[in-house]
Amino acid sequence: MTSLDKTPSAGTSSTPLLEVEDLVVNYGRIEALHGISLSVAEGELVTLLGANGAGKTTTMRALSGLLPLTRGRILFEGNDITRMKAHERVGLGLIQTPEGRGVFPGMTVQENLDMGCYSRTFKDKAAYNSTLEWVFGLFPRVQERRTQVGGTLSGGEQQMVAIARSLMARPKLLLLDEPSMGLAPMVIQQIFRIIADINAQGTTVLLVEQNAQQALTRSDRAYILETGEVTKTGPGRELLHDPAVKSAYLGVG
Ligand SMILES: Nc1ncnc2c1ncn2[C@@H]1O[C@H](COP(=O)(O)OP(=O)(O)OP(=O)(O)O)[C@@H](O)[C@H]1O
Ligand SMILES: [Mg+2]
Image (spheres, protein in one colour):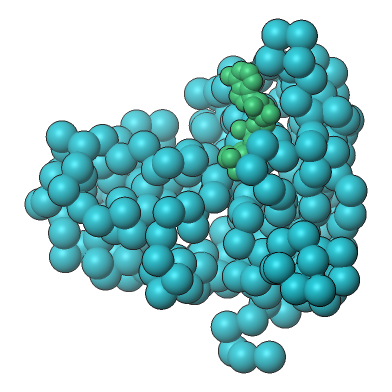
């Protein structure tokens, strides 16, 4: 185990930060999620691991309020937010970094970051500055590129900007939708290291991924999602050594 590996969180809080019960989501008549239940405690890094089409993005969008539920309940800090609108959830600190990053290509990096603040009225300039300083500390590359337009950044830099923009809203729960998508192995490692740092500094993270090695190594717990159903759950490092997980997600055995 290296210093970068995740040791399980103490799990001190009795009420989970996020609790999802029996989530069903349809696209028309097609049921994409068949009754997913999961929870995330304050301080945890939890991964939802699944292959293409398993329903990862659907889950994230349902949690953010971008997709209506057919059935189920979402509790945040113990409060039922199932019927709450997306922007109200953002106001509570439920912040999503979308699949594909969604960096505004014609805006500079700094302007992209400032878009992350629209949901939050900083008390004063000092609060804004300290948030920016925290974000630049995590992402020095983003600071270096602050005047460059988003569309000219590399894929890895765009992913960094997308996460940095989410952090500008000071999330209580950061929802990350496949941050490793389309990136080179070295960049993936770098992004995962930063995600682990963000979590270690106190932000709770729910990550959806296909990169089992990186995600499970760094997670307190994980859920395996297969065709819209949770089929297995456990500590990240335990699942990393599970023969079925190794065979399906790590190409071993
Ligand atoms: N707008 C839509 N209309 C109809 N079906 C959809 C729509 N969006 C997603 N689906 C279907 O729902 C299922 C889950 O899709 P989803 O995008 O959640 O998967 P995913 O796990 O995020 O996959 P990936 O790893 O490729 O991003 C898939 O079968 C997909 O075809
Ligand atoms: Mg997806």
